[in-house]
Image 1 (cartoon, rainbow, N blue to C red):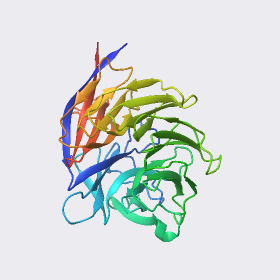
Image 2: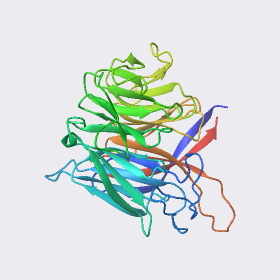
Image 3: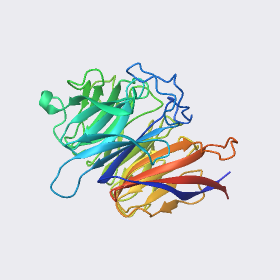
Image 4: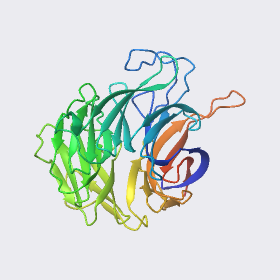
Length: 367
């Protein structure tokens, strides 16, 4: 059955500066299962989470100072209500991308605009606290990034490993236990690399997109100089997202405002090409893990679009007043005043350079 979707505004969080990225941490490994907040959940330090911890997922919001004379950034951790601040991580550089990594997904990898890859561990011994861990950078030797780090993505199977992309034209792999130097470096792009995404369904598989108008596929077992495949596009590739249920489907957002979807097994011809969805570059894509085929996109036109086989028409929201750079899907179970159990609600969170993170109730409607 074809469905239409509606976005209903919920809560709004205001950051101190422009929001660049969002990253969801769920208590369970499966993002489609709600966290229960019980005390038997362990973090990587071996300490159990307190029984009164907020239930449901946690959302990290990364921001960067893009105005004035100060150069800094940070991360705010929000509870599942998306309004209560649990803790903060401050930095002396902008943070353009973030991802939860590590065996328990309690390490936050931060892509910084000074070329550093910073790691912080979330602890819950008494209160929520981000504890800085390690920094991977060129200052550790001629092996780290030497320009703006644009993307970060954690592997689903090799849980301690994550990937980063950079304007230095490279993609690098890191291990949270040994940040002194990258595990691997892929350097076949010949211009700025804007994005990198690990495949959530296939081990060792990842993709990257570049200003050189190419999408490259990588298998970290093939060596650093051998791309596993790729495709050319008419415009620079700024964002990408793997399908959460189809291991070969990859969508990419382009500088001209369009979105292309590829079959990773045969990259020569795209499966779909949605043109003119946005009136500016598409800097963020996110598939919903709660629907069979629903893709959210955010652009420099300040709009959010929902597309896919599950929607009757493309849905566009223009509430933000500046670039949309972060998107995350989550489910929460709302409190019931009469004590009866209520079904889970699907929310879409969006972060923008207008300094707001907004949440939207996604309501499917039969058409």
